[in-house]
Image 1: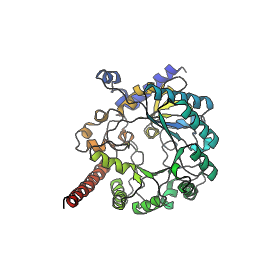
Image 2: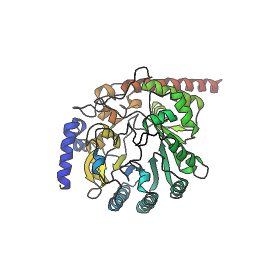
Image 3: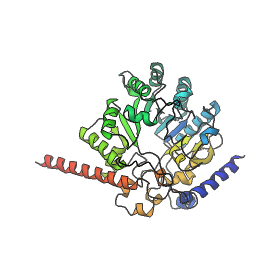
Image 4: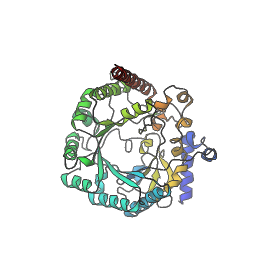
Amino acid sequence: MTPATLFGRVRDVQRTMAPWPYAELDVEALKATGWRPKPFSEVILKVHQRCNLACDYCYVYEHADQSWRDRPPAMPGEVRDAAIARIAAHAGRHGLKDLRVVLHGGEPMLYGIDRLTTLAESLRRAVPPGCHVEIGMQTNGVLLTEATVRALVAHRIRVGISLDGTAAAHDQHRRFKDGRGSFSAVARGIDLLRRPEYRNSYSGLLTTVNVNTDPELGYQQLMAFEPPAMDLLLPHATWSDPPPRPMGAPSYAEWLIAFFDRWYADQSPTRVRLFESAIRVLLGGRSDSEQLGLSPSGAIVIESDGDIEQVDALKVAYPGAAATGLNVRTDDLDAALDDPGVVARQIGRAALADECRACPLVEACGGGHYVHRYRAGAGFRSPSVYCTDLDVFVRHVQRTVSADLRRRRSVDGS
């Protein structure tokens, strides 16, 4: 199949499965108004497609899109080299001063520490002078050893680890393929990164919210690992495949509020991206979280076969939801800037449902995560499947911060 034929087939699928934006957003007409896309400043490199865990909520393996099965387990050398060349060309063409590249999977440590560090150094040599490259890796932490951590530190690769709170909460979903829980193995990896000589490469923790767990206990456990930063992710879900809402469990809003209140009261040095983004947008700033706000997304994915795709979370929507029909062996990253799905995540209010645009919280909420707006037959222009939870959570943060500001002004004025 020629690249042009593949591209056409991908677009046909997208128009059918997601009329918004693929059949309804006119990118050329938008450009005629003077709008221009934001270049990609974050590239996720899927260096390995397989994983050594079998997490039951994984958006890559356990949802609608199963394209991982047809891709090479490890990124071949020619794809790696093509990806590096395309990334460097994109950075140079747009004069990027800062670029973030995330080594991802599957489980990226399965790629091997030598190949990971070689890739990192090749990438740094390839980007134009004046462009600072931050290289990170998102891992489950199981394969970290002192030798591999030492190599990651030496090659300035920052490491984020996925951990879901307490041992009981984590092991409920994040298990080995034989059913064993992975918490103990992950904790050993985190403890290595926490050591003073390695801590500069410890970027933080990534946690998926589980309303069946106690947010207070989760907070205590996560903070015990002293993460410099943390992100809390709502489980990826859509109107066609809604999130679990167990009877008797708190709502997602209640869970987030309990966690937020403890973090805010503690004045914790750990930066929680979701919470800081909520505060920032409520004060008129910009969000750096996909879950809140109207900031344009600058992220793109390169799969192990070289396919240029949108963010992985889209794989929960339908088969091929992340596809662009482009590949680094034949296409520049710039070509993806014209993809209607990429554009829809950069145009703010214009991509939102009527209900969202009329909402007083639109600047703060921003319609929630793009993926969570999906509804079969309509596409990505519904309110978030977490709309009620986001409304309650954002209003709580607003009240908390407003009360704190009033108190501080009162103290300063007395």
